[in-house]
Figure 1 (cartoon, one colour):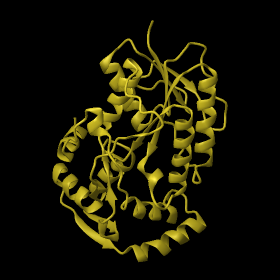
Figure 2 (cartoon, one colour):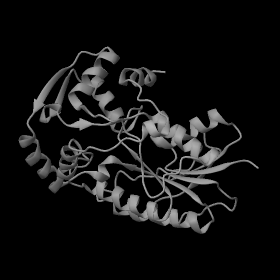
Figure 3 (cartoon, one colour):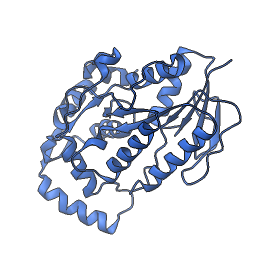
Figure 4 (cartoon, one colour):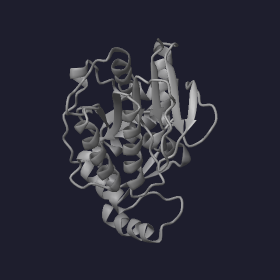
Length: 289
């Protein structure tokens, strides 16, 4: 019997990476994606339409695992992200799917929780209490997401503004570790971590400034950094948040969360899982392949 996996948020950075990795490992794996947009998506055999706030109509065939990657970036308070994820996970459980993986973030452990961090923390608890698996991710070094925006900034201007002088810490996550761990759980039923999330970030963080220096060298770009004091940025962002300028998705909660994330000290589970921390330069080279 063919192994089947259901991945929500099809078309996203992690969901597509996982789907591609699974197909590379075993072409017989049947992958169904959930997306708010109809149409074909690379690496997925089937796409079913689904949007948070709407019931998820799970096909009658039995799935071996559900990977929850769906995230609505337009949901500023993350209320619908939280409720929608629980609604879909409940529907999966009622359909008899025993294995479920939720993608969380180290932001769930910050001293100050943004709306995003609060949502992730609440969902972590919900999934763990029911015996499901949770991955905590740091800054995913891949062609998309927050890191993708950093790469784009290097090519959009030779001058890079750095809030707080770029002293905020980011903790890298190698996307291949995410993909492989999903495969291990899906295909072999291993890597259980009862009642605890798997922390897939590196042991040590790196400042945004240091990260951009390494990245610019790897990309062959010459840039100049423009430090902007946090004390100047905060009131401006506060005004932007109040008047809600379209297209700008940063608020004071994001800034506070970023600041608190820099103080995090979380144990990494990579070594226990058998993964090595690849040098950042190697991850950067993989981006160009």
